[in-house]
Length: 181
Image 1 (cartoon, rainbow, N blue to C red):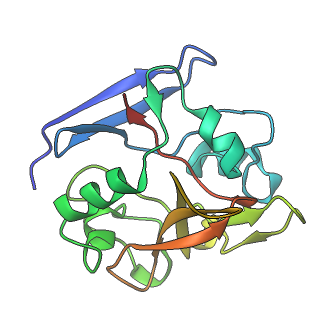
Image 2: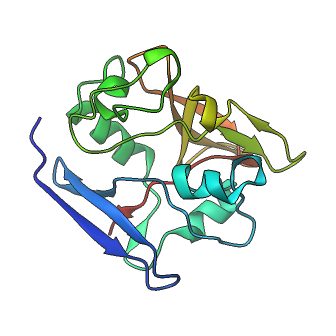
């Protein structure tokens, strides 16, 4: 449960500084991406939510949003992270931040991953769900296709210790964590 290393990365595109953490030999952003790529949005279209939770991206935008030298993680990389952090049944608790989740559904943040409840949206109709500021859910894209028009995403809920994958319409708006190439 020991962090191998923590650091920072400055995105040369906009000067934003991101916390990073090495977990199981892989360097991850320790916060959600907040790069204003065309097609990305802040939850409820409120920039304050972007500052706290990062921006939300449809999959096409997410695939191009990480800075040079970084990429959106594959399902295999997500699975390796969860295996390192326990397993799908318990990794949600060890990866969630220690504050910000609804009904004291906070995690232990054992690895410095600091998962926050950024919620999600849908680019097809502009609706948002599971408000990040209410602390319900966090959703993240993987780069792995599932079926035509769908890709694998991961999510964590306030009321459980688990981290689950699902097949999601690529038009959903999810958070992005970048992984170092």
